[in-house]
Image (tube, rainbow, N blue to C red; front, top):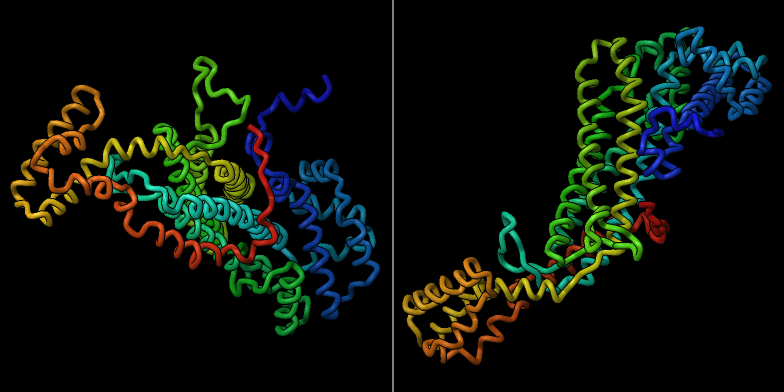
Length: 485
């Protein structure tokens, strides 16, 4: 059957099911090998400009064949040569016979390999950052809408003092804002490896330019600028420091931890029926239980976030086993890192952010359920306020405390032992001792008197810390996510 071969081998679901086209392309062979050719063209242009005997015709020939890569020929060459870079040098030279003598002049494999990795990392961050900004924007709108809607707070997943739905969302937002800062910093801290030679000393280029140090430095600067970087690392071994990979992937792993926390919270709230992720009209939650509305988007985020966090170990191991200027086990692990952990980290972060944007664009809040849960717990939380009101009305604090303690224990027994509703308020209303404050009970038990400064905190946090961070991405905010389930 035509096309059946693709079902006879493993395909990463990150690409086949989840990832966006732009992120999948960023780590594709097409992007990788066309970038290699661009780097050879940059090198030739800069070497020509600085006086090496390279002609306009050679550069033009290379430019005209930048994208027409014969992948079959390159694969055949690699099988013969056992060297991927030289296989592509030969393949490029085959279609550029005039330029063949000067392709890769003075360079080592890491000139194209490492510099391409850095370009892919930079471009990967440029794909992720607007997506993270959109998630923050959607969640900020949600926080603003529900800034003053009281809800039970939980510590140890036990009912605690009230907060608001919007204030809780700001806890999520604060972590995401820190992730935005971390991703931006990792992206901005990236430098180019540049043209450094086999052990990073630039000896081959110094020889090409007959000992002219200024020209070697200018070559490095020119190629770095052509590749779109402001700076190159001043010192490298054969490779750029693998700490760079650690910095990049640690920011993504940290994002994974944030998303896992947010989506776990959403799953817990879905169980309480207070908040739900979007649910399609014909979506099925369970094959056996038709009533179920499983939080599958949040579950997907949690699952992928664990993978994202776990991927962090590989670059740490790689950075730790660097010997002197470079070892071959770096090459073997690096091919694993580049082709697995680095792309998978970006691909995983990509689908997590797309899914989370879809969730935050369609979060459903059930105020009546939230109100019912508050009514169930608030009488217990209001006991101190009742005591203070009685003292103001002339009562004795210790006597009032004992009265409330006894009534609270009786109400708790109804809830825990009989499965009934919390009837503490009815017990207070029915006890003549509390007659002086019965007219105040509605005010004392108003949930909005228990939320402190939550609405004001939401307003200030959004205006001072969240919205300004989104300004650079305003032009990219309107993208909606149509999530394939």
